[in-house]
Image (tube, rainbow, N blue to C red):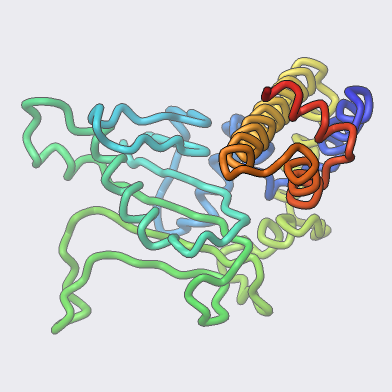
Length: 276
């Protein structure tokens, strides 16, 4: 693919982005009004007057030897409640463990050196994942989890933590909290008459028409494509050296490279010459 073709492919991708893309989701959630309305629909039992702070692609200051994470959206409301909201399209079969680690990382961002554990009482934490798959295989549109006593499920541990997982693949949304439209929008299905959906689609249109946003996206995608291409090139070079070390002659090396990496003969010959 030529450079021009690569650029056109990325430009087409930009125009086709939906709310299910984590970059588009993050950009849309920079709009405080949309952010607030989404939270109110997720948690109708909470009184959320306003969003005090919404940070997208937030990296948490974890210990140096710990794995770092970058939250799609990190929100703090007027009652000091913390919400971590993620868009997750691919099922990597590790959702419960990501939820567990995200809760821990959220506390790192609240509790500083010397702080009392009691400080966490004033900072309830909610981790929300919008998934395009049903990890728990119960056909529910929504799953909510919190710490409870196994002998007495009515007794909570009182940690102030809650996990919420939405499944956009649900056959029936049982929409008692107004999120069916958003979940359908993840599949690019626009529900007429839903004010939140209307806000989001208008915001996505505005974002796509922003030349600055488009330029940043194009640069990010090109850099990513170049990195992948460089990584593939290095992998092929290493394979060529290994085949040479195994005692293969040039013709055998070229044949193996063409077969394994779908290279033309000229490409394989050029790569072999650069290796030697």
